[in-house]
Length: 321
Image (tube, rainbow, N blue to C red; front, side, top):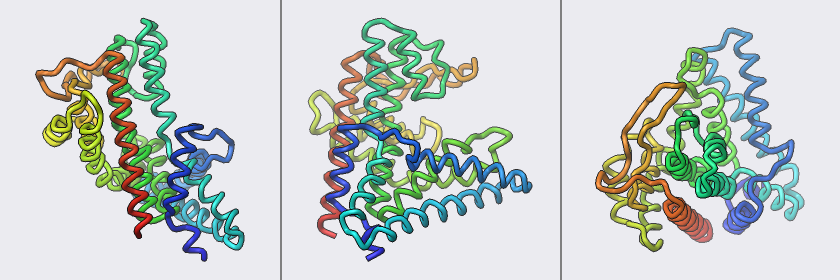
């Protein structure tokens, strides 16, 4: 009974995705990601106070958080297992709280809406909510490109990977994935303070996104075959050839695939802390740089179709398991 309350369910996954698309990420004080982040900061402070501020401390941080949140989730569902309806409601609400597609789409739409009417300060401000680069040097087209890049990258860690781990391991799988993702966001920096302490979270995040990122490349290519005006062949070709241009082992697969799908170039000149860190483009060299509302809409549509394919495949696998 306990295991069945933790196991992935096709009906609850479908319902969670619908809730996310209709309502967006729920905002409430006890949101799981907020609680994970709070416990992470508390545990980090205690570990550093004990001198465990290197590789070992970072690994201990993961073990503690995984036990607390993976085990805590299991205990919560076990506590309500005798009431099947309540168990289903808790399961559904946890799942819904840990998917994030609508909010991502809204952020990208906000960048495009501001850029489309020539409100560059608003476009830069909206872009700054998604990217860590300097936005004060970005024109409207660069803001729109950054939105498309974020749409592709966050499709993996905000939607595809959570569903992947939910299907594979059930509720504990998605909770542990979100724990690792939060660790990467909070401590996974290559700074003096976090280079060693954040190593475990950053590497685990790379590992847990490894297969979902490559599946997303293939699914974007499939989605392009179903989306008017996009190129399935371009998604496959550019994704395969140019994924390594983007730093890290995973982000480039979806970003390069989406660039190939919409037949546009992404990235280009990027500044960070007042210094230009790259001027490399992603996409077919013969393609025009992305930077119009039409490009944003096409990327938006391709990502939505990709998400639909992800959910369809996941539900089909769960229904036949």
